[in-house]
Image (cartoon, rainbow, N blue to C red; front, side, top):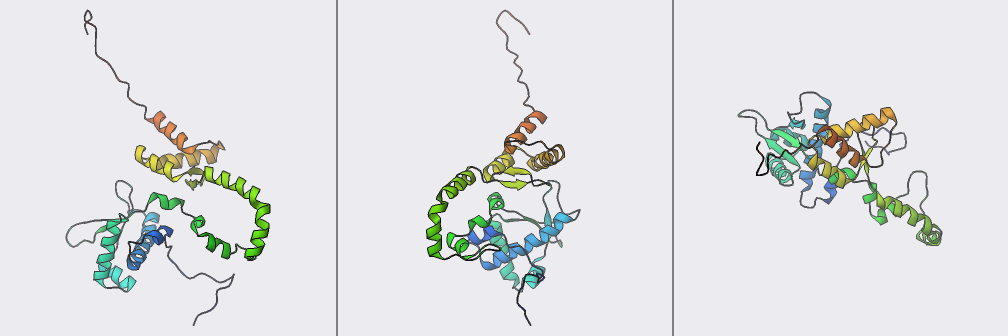
Amino acid sequence: MTQFLTQDSPIPPYMAFPRFLLDKDGLSETAKILYTVLLDRARLSQKNDGWSDEQGHVFIFFPIKSLAETMHKSEMSIKTALSALEKENLIVRRRQGAGFPNRIYIKYPLEALAQTDRNLSVRQTDSCPTDGTKTVSVTERKLSSSNKEKNNMKRTNTESKDERTAYGSYQNVFLSVEELISLQKVVPHYQEYIEKLSSYMASSGKQYSNHAATIRSWVLRDHPAPVKRTYECKEDESL
């Protein structure tokens, strides 16, 4: 027996399907659902101690037989899907020795953090009204569009300059995808600096115009470049 969803209906347990998987045409549906299952299990590892290695990377244990039972697939289908996810660099499997299941590390593309509902097509956003609004006909949209052009242009110019995502415990450190990738390359413990900046701004009320530049300046302050010494001397001088 099923029933219609209402505004007050409780939502049954669900798994979050990452939006970036919709663009992974090279992955089968089985592989995409498998990644969702692994990601859901990894969220539990994040919340519990003892499920990260020396580098702080979270891992899970999920034997192939258990995965096959969970997804109602054959073990061969699971093995094929795992190999496909490894090929896409979305998981890493590490052997733990005879008789022990592999450690599975879940990975994700950095650009996926910046994906939002803005990635919906124009047709989808036009035909799906937001909360509390009514669907507007195409004719009415055309008639009112001329009155909104100026406001839309201003808004577009502002949004195109800076599309950043919030990070940190207090969601107050804003970084673009490019800035995040750059920090990851040059700052080994960039996540610690993001948390440090987030906590400092929340506690002090201080604001910075460029959070990526602030993190870089803090890194240089904490780890100054070593002074190069020269041991050369002129002909008449001795060391």
